[in-house]
Image (cartoon, rainbow, N blue to C red):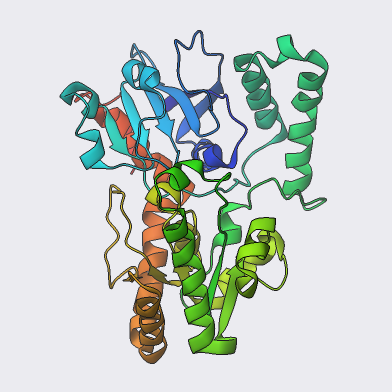
Length: 384
């Protein structure tokens, strides 16, 4: 068994998948989970919401392996200071061509994290949440800045999570549970297409706006909605999430209501075909792992970033570059039930092996313990 010590700084859906994986592995006896206070941060990002630092060790082996997770959308390294200090640095938006600008020593530290989404484990507990929030407030110096607020958070956050786990209350800012996303591939699916997305204003996406790509980015989304609506009619369920900018610029593309996160997830799981377009910075969106957990057929723009186990076009998804190609791919899946059924099975299998939080974290820990060339004592056996 290995011991994982996490030094929490962020309370964000961006790191929730990592915590869910660690919590599930703790529950099945694979690891011991601790929370600690990081002694110093030499620099690092101004925004830590997508970062997680941990150390991995086994009894009698020193020093521990220093591990950093970077779950941000963009290919740039979020914290060069963390990269320099870490032994291994897991990057969500892993792009070998970009990383080629770094020294060989730094490149050797970086590994693809895999597909990423926001989710919560049912194996969390009140005491575990309490320890995590206490450590996070210490790392953020919250007790020094505002001791009353920090003390309220110390009890309030674990209480909210406890009520959510037992069904007494649903808090929209808490990610859904892992099994809320899952649908077996043999479950019936409506022959419909689902695509609910958002557009960004220049203020919301200044980098994309400055690069002159915002109209292209938003245009792909709204023109895909228009093409699917025109061709499939009532078989298409989709549109834009509400915002002042979307309602002003693209009033014909608005989704008819706001179903909320759970309602959005239910619609996704009900429809046979789900659509994905590239995120800001060409990131692979959270939709892909969500669709795969629900064993949906996927029609997607090309994915720019690498994963440890590649997704295969025509097996895990049908690709498109234009709205017209998106329409044709959807029609192909409707016309070929055998292809659709095979894609559903392939996607759920990929999810179960490589995306589900305990499997994703188990793979990352295998990478950690194999990185040194002499694995941590007795750890590989339990990370199969």
